[in-house]
Length: 75
Image 1 (cartoon, rainbow, N blue to C red):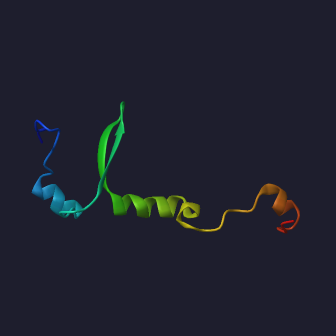
Image 2: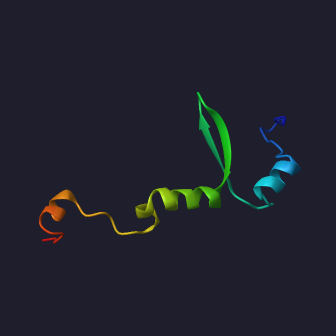
């Protein structure tokens, strides 16, 4: 891929087809100075976060340690 004058890139058709990237999709650009750049579809990243951090998806928070010591009762 080449970067155009405006900083734009074109994702090759083969890669778009392989990863199910369609016109209008929102993509995330994840970057690390040492590890490089990754492009991820927003919906795929959201599902990953939901699975890795269920609390972020609206699940109730885990009880605090002092609550579990009192048998899970909250005051």
